[in-house]
Image 1 (cartoon, rainbow, N blue to C red):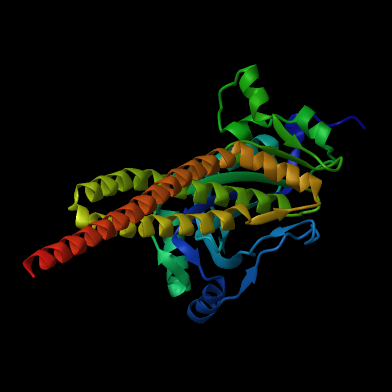
Image 2: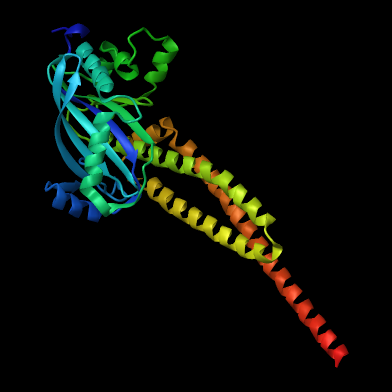
Length: 375
């Protein structure tokens, strides 16, 4: 029997996932978070792991803690729909909240419209009311597990359309040929140029004949008949890494002008106290460098990839697409500037101490000479 026309193809089973990620603290004590959540919210939690990938091939550096936040009603254009909410806490201070809307029996066009409708319903960044309420529930539930909590305005959002089954057998090539992915990936209703279409479809990956992943900057489409969630987890970690690298990039952006002002102020002080002030400032900068370096290493090692070539390709492509290496390089450059400044301040403090010792020796010699003349 010939293939059905594209207009009759339906997503028999699937989902739409809307993610919002927040930087909430310097770090999160995951063990304490699980205990506090069980005590205050009285629901269980789980440690994240990739479901279909052997741990030796690809695994979380420190498995995040996952919580269920129940079901909410999401207002869409054709009426409210139930949505399941989950959250993940990463040890480097990030929280990821996911709103999942189940999909059954929607035509491909209706599926694309539903995804765009969900995107409008959850609101653009900064966080809309639904995200703010959910984040407040998490903060209240985990309590003092947040180490040095911060009210950062930084957040990342990501939207994923998932098809687990169509109303007819579908290979990845047939799906790409017969279905228009552009409205889903772009959110645009007008026809895009050929160049823009190519850019949107550039990051397309398949492992089996009947699966496919297409990545863009803020959206993805996943066709996964077996229901594996590993690709979703990988994209979530990549977004969390982007969020944290952006946070440290902005933190160092604010710190550098302040550092220059402090150095200039220290230089204007009375020379006899300058060495101490240089030493105090050097210690402060060293502490900053140590803290940022420790956290960025945790972020870099959030996911460890060894043997799973397919997921490694998707993970690397997502990091590049999200510009994580670019932001990470900017953080490294700024840390290098602060390290060089720390070294210069330490040298200047040491030089100041040497000058003070020389002055003290000269004063003592002068006192000895004066006392000898007087005697």
